Length: 211
Image (cartoon, rainbow, N blue to C red; front, side):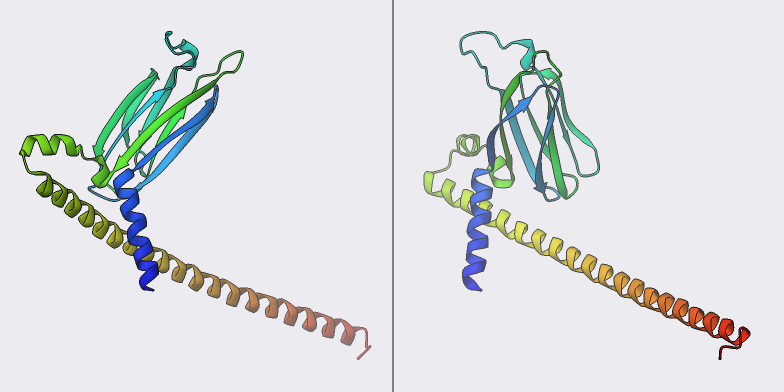
């Protein structure tokens, strides 16, 4: 059990420190969405750009994309139309899956656009270089402050995961209760139909004087 908890803590620490940086391909006329589970009041920043297929030359118009970042309830936090790069930053007002959707307009002949996305949340979203310069603090104090922020973020994340687990348990209990009620009613209906059929057959045979 201790090993599992340590593994969870190390995994969360890795996620908090490095965030999500990725590169993916998108064909023209298609949409691809990236989801990030963010807790309430957590800061998140992201930047993206289209990789130029021909270095040293201007990016063709066929490689322009449309980007939208939405909250779990559909609130828009960022929108870019026909862009080749951009960035977004906000503090989450609600917990859940935030989505960044990328759309490449239709083009003939079809082209494939390569996009690089760097999305960071929590401690990883802070610019620690600016913090160090602004505070003019020593290296040890700076590392301790960064470590404290990381531990605090992991602590909050574990409580958030516990809340989500309790929500899922409540949902499972409610679903099981509904399934039990539905099964019980189904059995009652089946028994009632079987009883009516037996009564109908008995009445039929009595009328025909077969019984």
